[in-house]
Image (cartoon, rainbow, N blue to C red; front, side):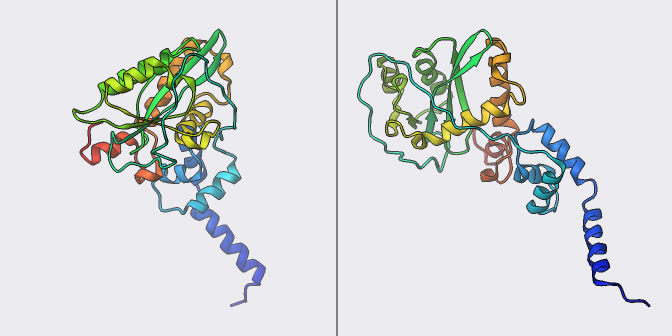
Amino acid sequence: MPAIAPEGHHCHHAKAGKDKHAGLGAEAADAFAASKGRYGYRGIKAALRTGVPEKVTGRIMAEDGPVAHVPRRRGHGSHGGRTNPAPGTPITRDFTAERPNEKRLTDITEIKAADGKVYLSPVIDCHDGKIVTYTAGYGPNAQPADTMPEKAAAALPEGAHPMVRSNRGRHHRQPGWLELMERFGLTRSTGTKGRSPDNSAAEGFFGGMRVGSIRPRRWEEHTRGEVLALIDGYTHWCNHDHIKQSLVWVSPVEYRLSHGLAT
């Protein structure tokens, strides 16, 4: 039997390896499209639930072109007004929690629409990243932030009094906000002025939402009503469909159901 030249041997095995994963590219592209471009190769590998290694999935995606959207850094400001001193920082930068309703995060962001602006204020549970609730408004005032604790408190089980982490912006130091926090027995925590990493988990939600619910279009191409619908769709996806590595590749709602926790 004639010997195979070394270069032929390597070529044969390269083709065999490629054939072994034939069809995975199309499956990865379908999963990428289903996630609306929100998953990178780790998320795609988990969504496909195959035995193909992450590195192979990443290589195939790199060859075929799908690239997850990455949030860009952006500055933001806070609306002025009468405020009170900010409290200390008992959460520091530890955004983990052993159980639901132990630590929560909140923040407020501005989104430019075709016919004005939308101001969004969500509440995020540190235990599993579930979006507990959110409020939105059309003006740069305290309304979105001040109505949020009431909506969030409505979802709390009896006796639960979580710590609530916010940035040091004026919205979270207004008298209305302070009164609501005291009424529901919620402990306040803030980061250092001008240091966004002190509330990075909330900032990460905004970054993911900005690219994950709109690309390749722009927010300015939609009306405020359409923006609200996009936000609602994205928060529902985050809770019910977004499989997360930290939750062993299930969504927050699936995770809670599997552990017998209230959703």
